[in-house]
Length: 118
Length: 109
Image (cartoon, rainbow over all chains, first blue to last red; front, side):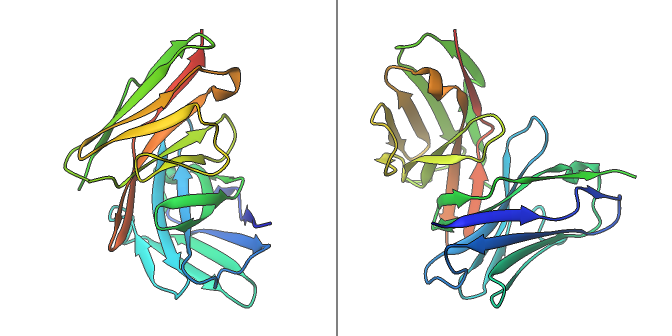
C-alpha cells in the first residue's frame, strides 16, 4: 500500500530556505503516468497547490510561487523534495505531498507544519 | 488566471438533510473539476472527479454535477461523519495547473 511521509524542520527563519522531503513507500516515484506534488495549507485557510513533478522528471509550478520553488526527486531513495526560497511568515503552513494522475490526487501524506519565524 | 468561488462558505444542516455546495469558475472549464473532502487535522480525500464521477469507495450519497462554469456537490442524507470542509479543484492538463476553491465548511445542526 502506498504511503507518503513528509519530513523536515518545523521552524524556518525569515529569508531562509524551507526544505522538505517526502518519503514514498509501497510504490515507486518512477511509476509511469503519475505525478508527485506538493500542496500547502496556511493555518485556518484553504488549500494551495505548489507544484508537481511528473514521473519523467518534468516539473510544473503554480505561477505565484514559481520564482521561489524547486521540486526535485531522488529516485535511488524514492524521495521527493521541496525547496522554497526567501520565506516569509506567509509561507507558514502545513505542507502535504501527494501522488496524482491528472487531477486525481489519490494518496496524500499526513502533512507537516512549517512555521516561519525568527 | 481562472478564479474559483464556492458558496456557501459554511453551512449547518441536520442529519438526513440534503446538502448542496456550489462552485463557480471565472471562465468555461468544461468538466475539469474535482471535489475533495477534508476532515479536521486530516489530508484531503478525493470524492468526485471530472465533475460527476464518484471516486471508488466513496459513499453513493455524494454526487457531482455541472459543466462549463457552474458545478454542484450534493450530499444526499447528511451523516455525522460528513462533518468536513469541502473544496472544489479546477485543473488544466497541459501544462498541469491546479486551483482550489476557498472551501465550504459543513457542520451538523
